[in-house]
Amino acid sequence: MLQAEISNPPAKQRLGKLDVLRGVALVAMATYHTGWDFEFFGYLEPGTTGQGPWKLYARIIASTFLVLVGFSLVLAHGRGIRWRPFGVRLAQVIVAAMVITLVTWFATPESFVFFGILHEIAVASGLGLLFLRLPAMVIAIAAVAVIAAPHYLIAPAFDAPVFWPLGLSEIIVRSNDYVPIFPWFGAVLAGMALAKLMHQFGAMQLLAGNIVPSWLDRALRFIGRHSLAFYLIHQPLLISCVFLIAHVLPPAVTPPEEIFGQACVRSCEIDNETAFCERFCDCVISQSKTRGVFDDAFAGRRDQNDPEMQEIAGLCTEQSVPQ
Image (tube, rainbow, N blue to C red; front, side, top):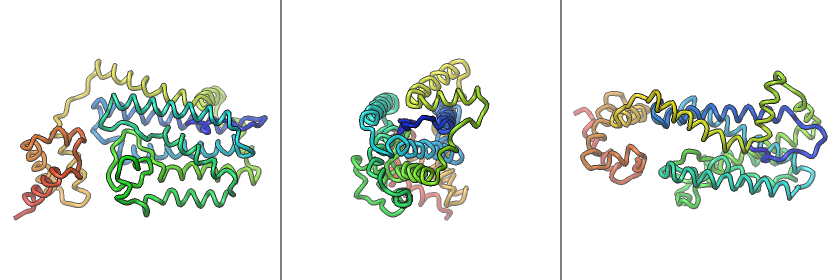
């Protein structure tokens, strides 16, 4: 996504396969966002694109983008930082990230994008400069450490919102696109290490030439070379199309209680029997409606860390255990 992002090497021959790979990743991202849009308008169950194969698909796409960021950073600045093009492109990414934050703040304030893929790319591009002169093996070790960091550095000290971009808080952070520094900067470092290894072994020419039919190659290269513009434009177009579809063929309306109950049972069944989970979730819905907090719980404004929801969960646990 977003070429070094997004600068190209001062080389005579452009590495066409790299543009094609970037284009493929962008098309994949558009397909994921199409699924997200259909979920947002009620055609898919809430949470569908945030779990299972959809979640894995999203992580593969994000990882690919960030590996390409690191790879392109080495190509563009490995022989010396070209400050002017780097600064111009970084400023473009920062402005785009701020636009995404503002738009999502107004559209979905309860889960707006405060540190998404563009924010990560902006920060990672700057941090990546610190690793440009290091050997590939050292960068690879740093990549592993950054990716593993959330498994051993998570602590309550990082629960304050100011630390959320680090990705090390114990609480669940709600956002439509959350790509924190840990572990995702590790993917950028992995891309840098890969680029340095390919330079070292003279393998960069493997990325030259075509790998798909010429008509498709031209289309994917065009998308890859204009990745930031594609990223900013595609989602408004997609969501507008789904919006029109929803007016012509509106989705079936499922009662909030049923949606909440299904999600509750699925989550509960991970560690408990189905019969218990059904009783427990029915109780949670009943108690939260009685106390007037169901709408907040359904909208995500109250989660399992909320004191009143914890009280309801405790009460319903006691009532749901067979006597």
